[in-house]
Image (cartoon, rainbow, N blue to C red):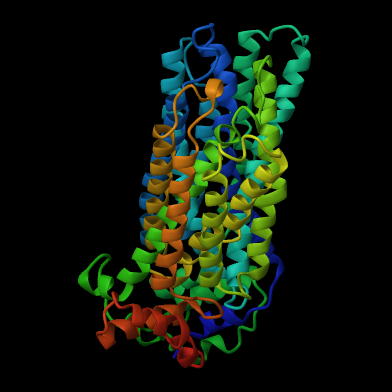
Length: 545
């Protein structure tokens, strides 16, 4: 029989603490997006200081820009793997604050990048961004896992999606802060006079350091968060403490919970072994038993996240290149104006497409389901990328800018109302409590490897002097469209639906699959798992095992 403390969580009404948890966990995603997506903006400022001269045209080489993005993503890969595992071994709460502190100090460190020469500044900036990536990576699995373990099964997807939607506001904040700082500094420099390198150098450092503010504001609240009841009950095997922690933050009926528990006579607060939830077996991570039960789910989550991040990060990091000079004329503008106009277009895209996509995901995720949204998102991303890429030069060079920008904005909408959101949600729902954070970290690390591949490959497919003659956009955009089609097909074949089911029911399905001996490579089995088994299991209570 399922632990009643978990049943109380699954049936709890929406309460104030759920929204508080969204803000506390979401501020990490907000900071993540701010720090990752402000790099293309500040590179406009760095170029005018450290790449000045007619030969360089005050432009940072695209290889350096992509390297700055990739080094933070590499740190993110490490952070997701390390902190994801620590979240299962030590507890979500214990390592959650540490990840946030790394982000705070690294953001400040980026602003204090040492030296006066170009090489020294860029190397120290890269080092701090690597450290920042580790903190960002640690935040991903912990935020998703904590929100999934506090939410009820009816609205769990919406709450996790709401946490992830803070990423859109982080992108908007990075654009807004850049615009404000550039406007203020441009005015203070006595425009139209040429801005001094010292002031421009101060401007980009200030933009980076402001990323520490939202993370710093939530440190206290993260320290005050209790451990998730599911971790306490299922991993630490302390049901009584789990019930206590629930009383601190949620108003749920507690009187039925002790009915199934037996307590030690010497210590009435400690349940006996018979009361503790026990797994059907104590198989270790990545063992044969683990792979038999959860290998298919881990593969599907990692592959989908890899594919969507190839597209998503390429689109974001190289927006100004995709626009091309015909959509983003920056001739005869100083560094502040260049950064301002790139930030303005990024803000417009965030307001008109990215953030509405997140909101649509929050609203529909528990109505349509994860699988359908992910398939639809991948499919429409592919269609739009083909529509932009194939006629990029033959049509879009000579026709209305509005049509191009509308289609380009749709790639962000269907990414967020699609796989960019669902790949964050599903790994937090499919795996047992003792592996949940680890598996989310592995899936997310695969995604960030895809982001690195996308950023580096996009740069490889584009000539370095794009700002002078435009870039060959057809090949990279078509490749991104193909990656989206692959994501559409693999989602249909491999991804299981988790909507409306408790976390323990999702795990029990994996156990049933393993015991049936059908394997995880059969398409016929996938179809049965997505459509039929949820109906068969709907009335069953199962323990975490």
